[in-house]
Image (cartoon, rainbow, N blue to C red; front, side, top):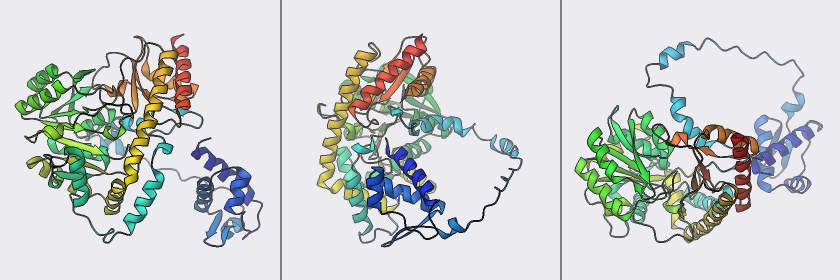
Length: 484
């Protein structure tokens, strides 16, 4: 049973129990509730919080939890009729001047954040399972950060100097081409992408993107009023021959790519193509936005990683994006953009207009986190856990769905599955939920018509390698149901 369903079930049980209590009656202690219902202290605490929010109980620190007087004294009366909403149809006209329905642009992002129903195995989310994240380490970092001198003062708009320096060293290396002055702290990776797209390209202009690519990139590009132009990739990353042609044909000034463990294919840009990407972009007078989202998700059995493109860039071509959310927590919305020259000034201006700055306590907590020796140990543990889940996933796919998986790399959190022509990947994903597993259809990852049906499978979101294997078994059942 997952934590969400445990909390809901315990809250429902306590809700029925409270109804039988007289006003002011004390509920059993947390320890007693843990033993009676066989749940964790966190589950008890969250269930009590639900009842407090509903006004059914009151919590008195040091004394306990009691039935609320308002609940006991509330007179029985028929439910008041729901207020009828006014005529909202005028909003369609008011919103029609925009570029189109934003819910359609946001749909792929909502899909990646969707929480599966109870008893459905999550092979969809891009965030590792809670058991793989350093929650105790984060809690300690946040507590220490709140006590730092000046922790609640307004931060510099570019971010804390110490944190910018840490990102500069982590991206470019010690004595590398990137300094603290080249770094802008952003609100996570998605926030950084939004700032970059709104800063580097004029509305209506083309932006080159890998095909397929992360659906969130396409959403950001379109929401900024830009036109994504696909450039196909293969096992060695973006096709540089086609990249040069795309720059020449479109006169685009931005190319967005993920050179390391690309989402969704897992491709790694080859050494030869790394140099070609920089040369082609420089010749076109264009920027390369390097989304380095997966560098902290390297598996324990991976060889040495290639340097970021930004570390080899001397001409200010690369705008690099790094985020800590995948490896730390979805709630640690802290990332960094690196750039030089007028490009950095443009990025800074866009962010300060949009959101002023990233909250200082969050930046302070991030500094505490990455400065703790336990952070490096956490990354090693995470790499081993991701390796084990990937190994289990690959073996299960070869056994259950032979032929759908081609190559894979020891990094990231996902596999890209190719199904036979004629299969509708959206229908397959829907059938998978019915059999008890949530996966991602491939269609939203293509800027234009997809060449073949695909699914993206995330092995990081499941709670164990065994759950990954069971999820793939359920996916096979869905595929057989659809293929019949």
